[in-house]
Image (cartoon, rainbow, N blue to C red; front, side, top):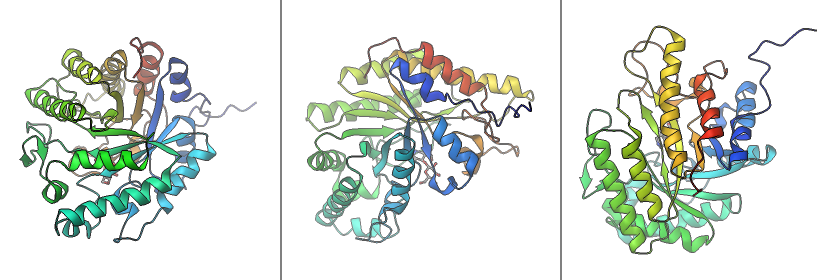
Amino acid sequence: MMLAPASLAQPARGLAALARPRGILFGAAINTGRLADAAYARQMATEPQLLVPEWEGKWAALQPEEGRFDFAPLGAVLEFAARNAQQVRGHALIWHQAMPDWLAPALAAGPARARALLAAHLDAVLSRTAPAIRDWDVVNEAVANAGGPFTENTPAVGDLRDTPWLRALGPGYVDLAFQLARERDRTLRLTYNDYGVEGDTPFAEEKRQRVLRLLRRMVAARVPVDALGIQAHLIMDEPFRPEPFAAFLREVRGLGLAILLTELDLREAAVVPPDLAARDALVAARVEAVVGTALAEGCRTVLTWGLSDRDSWLATDKDVARKDGGIHRGLPLDAEGRRKPMWQALARVFETGATAPPR
Ligand code: 9MR
């Protein structure tokens, strides 16, 4: 009998199947533009139990012109998920990027107009996506960066990033978005999503404190926030130590919020070992340390931002793509779709890492 080559003989048990018995939900970002590729579609059907649209849930996709909604791309995510018995989470109801060209000038017309635009978007999107989507990133990346070598410095108003939403509605726009979302769907999980909080640097510590100040204030003011999404776009050149990250996660859980890792991937060091096995071992070790810490602190949902190195923004975004002609190996599958040590690392932490009560 002819044996299929290893790359074709993809075992049926994906990461989600390994995670599920431990009460852990594994998911991945999907890009419907790639679904015509059979290998891509097979990966997306095999590994994750939860899908998040990489693009299809953003304003530019959903409302390309004012009042004209296009649900076809997001609908394709929902159909794919339904066919494969998967769940879908939403991303993102408010973000300062992926805004259609008309939106920023319209927001600038004043707070009443901005509020009406937000309300109309939430009306249309939440009614179309209920009951399929039970968790949305309501606000994405509202907290300003504290600078440092690893993230861009962002203009700030207090702790918040200066964006068209903030300029239109003031700092209260974050609370408003959560309140309007809750009014429209009482049982939807409402998540605040952000990045840059994992590292062991003064800048990551300052970002953690800013995020905590926002969440503490929201919880104290009874703003309906249910969860913190930690993107976890990891950066190998940024030092990591479990303890500061764990302390932050404990603070967040102390506020009664769930914790999700929403966009996990890893940007490798500027200079990587020439030996592929050594290189992949570094990626796997960092992923295991970060995800292991999160699981030990009660995180029960982990999503990677794509599955294969070929389909990653790490390969295409000019600011983060490798300068040496190669591509980052920061996702569970390599460019040919083969499982690599980061996949094994996730499998290991899913089997051993969940020691704290869930959130
Ligand atoms: O990976 C996404 C890329 O394909 C899009 O072009 C970009 C703009 O919509 O967004 C990328 O995803 C981002 C996510 O929405 C928010 N966190 C950072 C992600 C990587 O930039």
